[in-house]
Length: 367
Picture 1 (tube, rainbow, N blue to C red):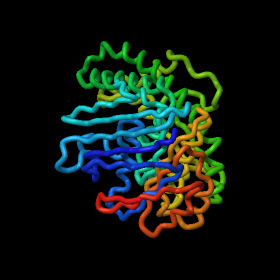
Picture 2: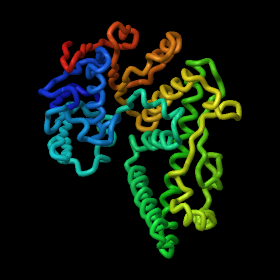
Picture 3: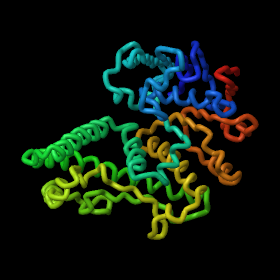
């Protein structure tokens, strides 16, 4: 679904209206640090999903001294028809339109312009708290599964209410919410488990090809540990999990929080039966983060038979030349590739087809 053009107004460093045309499959955006090149990638992602990968606060996106921001992206769908996404954020309100029709829920954008974004914060997938790895896994599923989005939303609502009941001491209602928590939670864990199984068919081979280190895998450790570890085995019935939850009831009353469920699941990188991150170097952890994104793109294509748009934001700078060369050679199939580079970097090494180059400096740009 190639993006043919992008118009920005009031978005980060782009105050006055700026128009970008993307006539090639590979676009290089070259500029020094702080020049605004990453803002273009952020705006493309925003057009695809109606949110930023860099902040959860839309007001932070507005350029200084501006009152609003607007994005218009033109793209081509599977039927070679030109489509349009318009987003306006003004006075704390966001309006998203697809071909002139207002989008009421951002999940309606699923599969519109599927994007996989590579950025520095991805390092948290390897070295950060468990919530970052859960986020990555959930993001991989929500790229194509609108029902999974509903499952997550419903689970979080139930969890929030249940925690509130614990804080307020309204214990007589917990049984009702326990049933709902388990019902939605088991659905989430089942899909997460299958996704990890499919990721392991991709990730370990990639890591060995780039680093020469074999046996690296991803292990899913559900909070409800009575769920069997082998893919394809029968999941326990809800009653079994409910009994486990009730065993923790008194402890939850003291701590006033829910102690088990998908929000406590763990995802661990293993090698030869041991946790890999504990002994991995910074470079090896950085490589894990990069290859997770490549695996995410491959996973999406296998599930949907569609190729995503890749957004790569200065993510290979910390790799040594050999690993960078190997990683470049195994980039997954993509509909389009957008990369940011510092001046002097050999962006020609990344291209597969004809390249369009934008030079950005101090919010100004030229082709």
